[in-house]
Image (cartoon, rainbow, N blue to C red):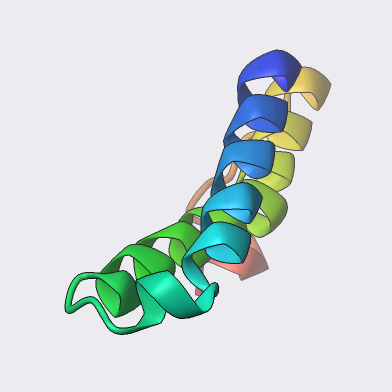
Amino acid sequence: MFLILSIGFIGNALTVLILRKPEHVRKALTPLMINLSIGSLIIIVLGYPVVMTLLLTGGQVGEDDPTCR
């Protein structure tokens, strides 16, 4: 899992860096691709660590948990 997240992070970061170059800025799909890459980076950095922590510690989020409200 760590390998997949690492490759995803590196790939999305490189995509953002490459698409910021002047020859790519003028293309119509560049903003969409940058937006998708940044969205994936946010999920990799903020979403997956929470899920992995819950899975590894055996924690369960139930109806009585204040984080569900």
